[in-house]
Each structure stands twice: as C-alpha cells, then as structure tokens.
Image (cartoon, rainbow, N blue to C red; front, top):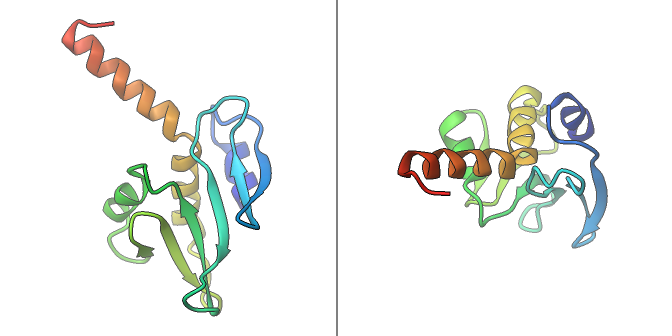
Length: 120
C-alpha cells in the first residue's frame, strides 16, 4: 500500500525501502519530499502493529484532526492497528501520502510566509 500510494502521489518520486530498527521503512531520497514512514509491531501488544512517523513533525497531530474517529493513535508518532481488524485503507493512504510529501508542503508554507513578510 505504501508503494502504491507513493506512485499515485505527485512529487514523491522513487521510494527507497530500508530497514530502520529492523523494520521496513520507506524514504524519498531523490525528491526529499517526505518524512520516513516505518511499519512495525507494537512491543506493548503483539496483537497490534503500527505505522510510525517522525515524532518531530506535525504529521500525527494533523491526522488526529483529519480523522477524529476511526484511527487509533500512539502519542505523536504512530497510528496503531489490531491484527484482527481490517485496515482503513483510504485513511491510511491519505496519511502516508501526507508523510511522503511533508517536506514539500512545509517548504511551500515557509515560502508563502516569507513572501507575505516581504523577505527572501
């Protein structure tokens, strides 16, 4: 699903798959458009897994606003799922697309703010 979402999201470019902390991670090395997306088990509960995002971003905060119900969050770093529940694919794909374009959107906001202030 991550690869399919990346392919369907303009500006993401090639995805590099890597292992971070022994878990599959997805990066945007060519465009540097996004923040890393990682998938792994929950150590607290072996019946759960999570999609992890960089906790230094505002991604999960945004996801909470977009999806106030239907997704289970862990702090500012993950969306948590139960193994025996169906994956809410549309919501997760939207979150993954946002992560894979995070830096592009952040740069656009910064440029607009500077333009309003009359700065470089």
